[in-house]
Figure 1 (cartoon, rainbow, N blue to C red):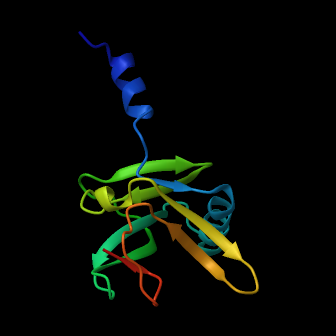
Figure 2: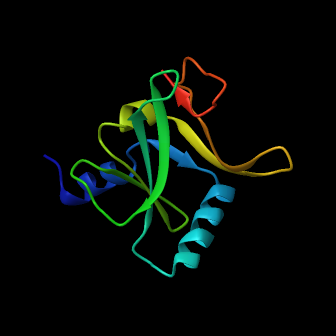
Length: 122
């Protein structure tokens, strides 16, 4: 027999699909504040395309879709749809601000192939 408290505890400790680094979370928070809205979340998705078959999409979204996996990182919600979740399990989203690279990066252990465009995997 499971009590409601046990159920909530299990749900709260479920492994998250993606990890958002502290640096990336701060950047997302700043970008959302610039938009002047408090209903936006970072949606991460995998879409068909790219030279290896799949590519990432990161965008702000206010929608909640059936089956979404939602993770909170310091007040920033990251949302992954149920179709993308298996491809993104264990992936880390970071933000680079260097002379040679600027923008969000995704380190995905599920990516078996890479290509020159750098944003797709198979």
